[in-house]
Image (cartoon, rainbow, N blue to C red; front, side, top):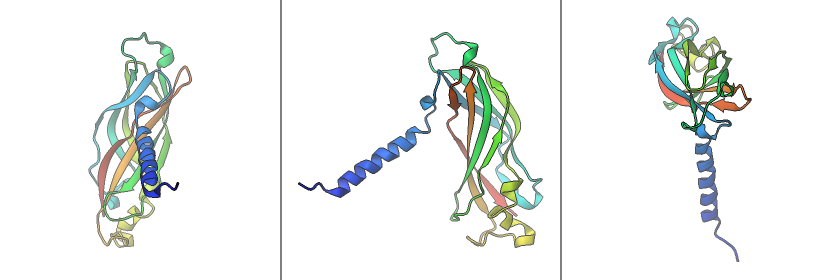
Length: 184
């Protein structure tokens, strides 16, 4: 007996979608702690590409190291050594071209039950600003996006932080997202 393929395909796609969403959950990381972005200040809202010094930064960002079981005893083995962070960009406007991701090493320890603060954290570097689509907004290149015909490019930023507990468990934050408007 043949089964209809459409319902089976829909069920398979729903399962894949559920798994993809589950990947953003911080509880899915190894270990007994969760890294969580708890505060940020100084987010850029609008960046003038022609006036940029080659970096876009967040004023400060706080990452907390929270025990998964609030009632359990903690240990210095649950401290998290921060290793890297990544920023991935997505178009919010009608364009499709995006800058390549930014991946950088970071240092510091987020103690269990405490936090770590990074000031002036770069979230976009010269390698993203000097290449299309953002370089199309430079006056020397016409100051507009040839893909959309607009002088404004709106990007969604997705940032994740990665680390390792002293005990060796890999830990990551859930992604945080925000939008930035780029103009000539």
